[in-house]
Length: 232
Ligand code: ADP
Ligand code: ADP
Image (tube, rainbow, N blue to C red):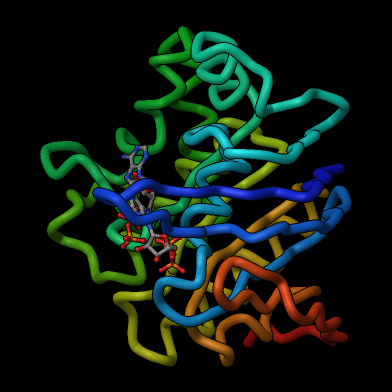
């Protein structure tokens, strides 16, 4: 469970103060797929960065699984992220000189997982995202959608409790966008993980179970979406 309580973030830009977050409160439950949706500059990335422990709030609390994230030291935050958090990026961030499976295995090697086990695990997740045929393909031999599947496999292979996705389909066409969102939806549901996605796009946000609408650093509406199987 993730509890965000009375969260504020103020940036000083020269003599002026920018209120990026203006008192945000919500709870996200285990296994939920939530979207934070709002226009550019509304505070989405700031909120995501706070929840991921990448930035400290000016005021307020973030409690994840009983731990106060805002009180953790930098070392503890690094450990928290390694252990519990996965990231999916808009730009995929794959290593171009490695193939699909090696890209998935790489963060496991940073965690000290032995080679044989990390290769098995990487292959398992490559299959899960439907890339068995492309398992040896280099990043630049894959389409954007395939690269994002690798990005998803890479995040999932670490068994994170929480996955943060920042505009994960920002560079994809609408058909591939639907496929990728359907895939993310299905996998996190099966694995009982929590997925928090940031987007400026209302259509994309509708793939989530709940949508948190943010403007000027405030959540003004929480909408629930009932999904049958949206995957095609
Ligand atoms: P979004 O992700 O919705 O586009 P952001 O969270 O990036 O919005 O930004 C929210 C507000 O905070 C914006 O006005 C932005 O300019 C400001 N902001 C974000 N990061 C910084 C920073 N490091 N320094 C100063 N202002 C910032
Ligand atoms: P934007 O949403 O502005 O297009 P990105 O999606 O590239 O930016 O990044 C969103 C957030 O994730 C940023 O706060 C950035 O610092 C962080 N980030 C991006 N790439 C990495 C990475 N490889 N490792 C850790 N944090 C990253």
